[in-house]
Structure formats: structure tokens, C-alpha cells
Amino acid sequence: DTEVTQTPKHLVMGMTNKKSLKCEQHMGHRAMYWYKQKAKKPPELMFVYSYEKLSINESVPSRFSPECPNSSLLNLHLHALQPEDSALYLCASSQAHRRANEQFFGPGTRLTVL
Amino acid sequence: GESVGLHLPTLSVQEGDNSIINCAYSNSASDYFIWYKQESGKGPQFIIDIRSNMDKRQGQRVTVLLNKTVKHLSLQIAATQPGDSAVYFCAENTPRGGYALNFGKGTSLLVTP
Image (cartoon, rainbow over all chains, first blue to last red; front, side, top):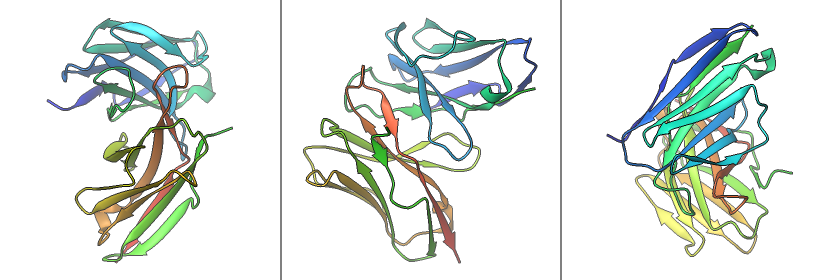
């Protein structure tokens, strides 16, 4: 299995809602990532988990809360988002959080905040 | 500022022609580079990678060239097909507080019949 899966594919939420994005991989990868991608822009790193521990937080607002329950799962909890948070949220994984590592990306969750 | 950039935001080629997509980087500590292809509505898909101890790497119909002297890499696609139409990103893996990927702006490749 060489796939990273993400659910849901699309999500529409209001600014007062709480929702979660889910990511799963079964490649035995020990590093997992969240990226945010706006239209016609490159992906921007948000968080990195290495061996289930948060190793990088790219100054992301606290309304985004990541969680890594185990080595195969990565969640992104959303609360009190703003319309400008609407974007494609991509999850990726790699063998380990070190140099020279191909990252495998999921298809993304298209988030719209009303 | 952004470390990885692309010279052309859009590229239009005819089917069957070869395509060349360029990328410049500014961090001399960058030692690993990846090219990704992203089709509309999908996540980035790995195409090919190259380490800084190499100048050239070939895959199926694709070649990546790395020129460390001028901090430039390129992606060459042979016999471009309509299915190659997508946005192409170069990304560098540098020890920027960890080994995360820094993506360039992207080039949109359009293949016309």
C-alpha cells in the first residue's frame, strides 16, 4: 500500500464550527506532515510529526490543532476558522524526518470556511 | 524571501515536443531536490529526485539536471503528452529547522494537440 488517504475530500464549515481532517498511511512511515495550499500557489508547510511527536510548527494559529494518535494516523482539528483559511489541506508522509526523503502526498481536503 | 523559484509561470508546448521546466534555488546548503506534478484537484505526485552529489538523473521520459554552480535545476520531459498537462513544482529539502520541503512557485504546463 503506497497511498496516503485523506478524509473528507470536501468540507464546508462555519466560523463557529469544530471539525477534524484525517490522514492515514500504511507504508510504515514515521514522519507525517500537514501542508496548506491556496489556489495557484505552492504547498506551505504547517506541521511536521516525527515518530508521533510534533517537531515543527510553522507558527500556525492555534485554531489549527494537530494530533498524531499513532504512527499511521494524523489529524488536524479545526476550530473558529476564518474565511481566509479556505484552502486545500494536504497530508504527506515520509520514511523518517531526515534529509533526502521523498514525501508522499494525499489527495487533500478542500476546505471552505463560510 | 523564497529560496526556490521558477523562471516561467506558464509553458505551452505541442504534443510530441520536449518540455523544459526550470527552477532556481538560493540556498547553497540544499542537498536534495524533488520535482512534483500536481494535476487539478489532486495532491502533488512525485516525479523524480536528485541529490546534490549528482548532475543528472533520468527516469521514464523525464530527466532532471542539477547545476550547483549557478544553483539551477531543470526538468526535461521527452515527447510531451496531453496527460503531462499539470502544474510542476520543484522542492528542496534543506535543514531549515528540520528537513521539510520548501516548494517553488510552480510552472503550469499546457500540452496542445
